[in-house]
Length: 218
Ligand SMILES: Nc1ncnc2c1ncn2[C@@H]1O[C@H](COP(=O)(O)OP(=O)(O)OP(=O)(O)O)[C@@H](O)[C@H]1O
Ligand SMILES: [Mg+2]
Image (cartoon, rainbow, N blue to C red; front, side, top):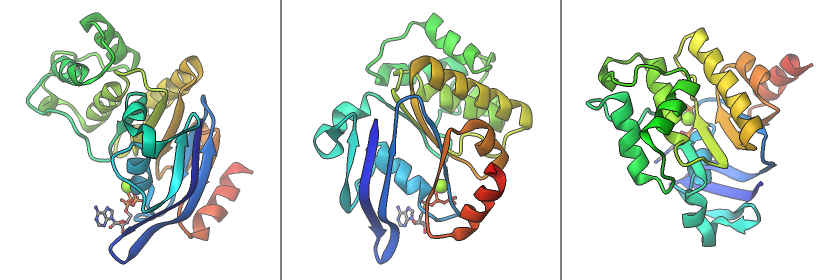
């Protein structure tokens, strides 16, 4: 379970997060929406322990981030908005590389199963030869190596075709249900949000999203 209480974050004079609060349960898929620059990526970085808030409290399973951030890191999976994989390595070589950095030990067979689950079967192809959608799938597979209880996905479906988008969506739904994983993800696609999410959290002051959401959810 995640609890975020009155988090504030500024970059210089720019207030990005102002008294932001939310909570979420295991097994939920939460869509985080808001305009460009609203602070979605900033929040995900804080939730992923990669950035610290200026003030406010965060708890995962009742344990505060301030004290337990290293322990939390081992149960969090994070896919940054910008794809972060080795272009000169093959798909499976990337999986093996990130597996070494992960506390969970998975066999090559298990790593391949994970790739197949996400419908990425070109295990021996160099990443530089993959399409953008396949790279996103690989980034997602890497984030799952440590069997995270809490998965943070920053625009995992940005710029990818409908087929891969649906495959990723179906995968995430099944994954959240079967593993009781809490997933928070951002997207600018309201149809996708509607199909995939149990709940939506709006970030920023913009009432545009509140109105749009009311239209979509009714
Ligand atoms: N490291 C940084 N240093 C200074 N300003 C930053 C930094 N990271 C983000 N910002 C600023 O903070 C604001 C929020 O950025 P953030 O990336 O969190 O927005 P976002 O909601 O993810 O936007 P997008 O939809 O475009 O991805 C923006 O104005 C951005 O320029
Ligand atoms: Mg962003």
